[in-house]
Length: 326
Length: 276
Ligand SMILES: Cc1cc2nc3c(=O)[nH]c(=O)nc-3n(C[C@H](O)[C@H](O)[C@H](O)COP(=O)(O)OP(=O)(O)OC[C@H]3O[C@@H](n4cnc5c(N)ncnc54)[C@H](O)[C@@H]3O)c2cc1C
Ligand SMILES: Nc1ncnc2c1ncn2[C@@H]1O[C@H](COP(=O)(O)O)[C@@H](O)[C@H]1O
Image (tube, rainbow over all chains, first blue to last red):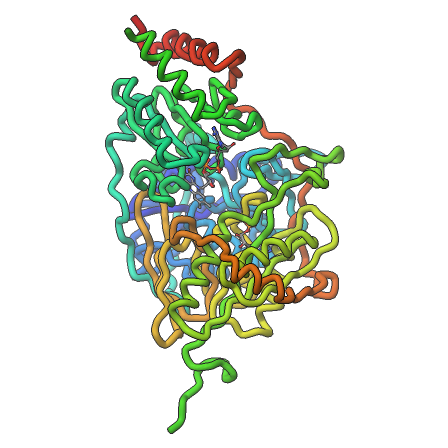
């Protein structure tokens, strides 16, 4: 058997997460430079239907590792079953989602399999006869090109970076199901708990005015609300630190661990543009950013860039807006 | 009557030994310049450093555990050039006890396998109950060092932890991990374990004067990285480049009023607002 690329499917409460298809798309891009067979692995208890869906949608072979009783992710189980599998079927590249799940077991698996581990990759580059992978560093102010110095590499893929075209396979991929026992010695899963109910106001708003740490003082939230009031169907959003500080609720947090939004206008005030935040706003129709730092990463994602102190710019803008309306 | 001393023997009953990893990073609100070879950023006299904001939550969590379990000691470890000791001092100001500095010679990228390998080799000899790290470093943003340390030590690891509670017998820890979509995952792990701490789990305190004064007297233990085993780095940083623009990014010019008027005009043209 030739070289193998594995992609580890991510699923949640019986549904395949979209990132799984992004992993396949990304692995297929890699296959253009690295001739190897791609196989998707799905791990869990009730996974047959999902395995079938992946095989039919993508045309890729799927190996379903059936673990009785494993109803949700458990890091110890994932890394131990994958380690066992890899002992029998060596791989060259393994694609894992750069999510709170993938980030939890990818580095562990890399150690267990003597692999390199490159996390949060956003692109694949082939040049000088070698493959390298790009990832954001310095809070979005630079991009690092990484490559591996080992035979096997574990990669975690930043969500939203590899677009999924229609796979249109000629035929469905094959499915193999293997049952394995899960014996966890050190960790015991106690279940998933809902911690937030998603906020309809913000996901359905046409305009989102979002505040970040650049707000400086809680009192300045008043400016954000005043601005939001001038638009119809608007809502106030936030970057994570404001929610961590309790200035706004977590149901207003935009980003990878918050909400994904796609308003007509996203107005980012004092937000640096960390990749975890940007992931939540890719679908926005128009993005305006106000930031004192001309090199803030948010400006690379903006349609209009305003290099200003928000505490002095927003009052002027609000004033002019009111004038124009009257 | 005998008092049963549990764990590694020499510890006092009810004591915990915690290691917390902290990193010093450059202040990312300032300008960053790439060096001419595109290998790293330029670091000079003017460069301003912070201690990784994500690590403050890990240090605070260690201090909270110490307040709960008397006789707990908190060791802080940092890998980096001489300047990294400033980050350690700051954590001592928050209440950490002993600082360990793995001193590297130069600035530049170090593979997380190296960093984690060095930290694990130190941790192996010192019988910690718990190792805490931040969820990621602000500069490298890999989220790797914590789980990699755990894998090297064969300990369990939970990442993105937003709540933890150590069992009264100090043999296990209950943790809640933040996951996407407004859920949290709950689990229990045997100690010793590694936890990577997500922001928002607590409110990091400011260093206090008394602690800072004590920290000034405390000696940081310095270990030369070159004296340690050199784990295979496994990955190489080929180069570092400026970011790509994802959108057109029209930069508005003029004074504030002019910018405000231009923005209104653009929003009106795009039919995002409708001005009379
Ligand atoms: C696993 C994980 C998940 C995460 N999930 C999310 C998420 O879902 N959502 C999210 O937002 N973050 C998330 N984060 C955090 C993320 O990495 C960043 O730390 C966060 O987005 C930074 O928020 P910020 O831009 O408000 O703050 P900072 O990065 O501190 O930026 C503040 C900005 O304000 C500017 N500024 C300062 N003063 C002014 C002023 N007076 N006027 C105008 N501008 C000013 C500064 O130049 C700077 O650019 C996550 C992190 C991890 C590790
Ligand atoms: N050089 C370092 N010295 C000490 N701890 C580190 C170092 N680099 C990373 N860490 C720890 O590991 C966490 C994750 O870092 P990273 O894997 O670089 O994203 C950080 O929040 C720190 O707690």
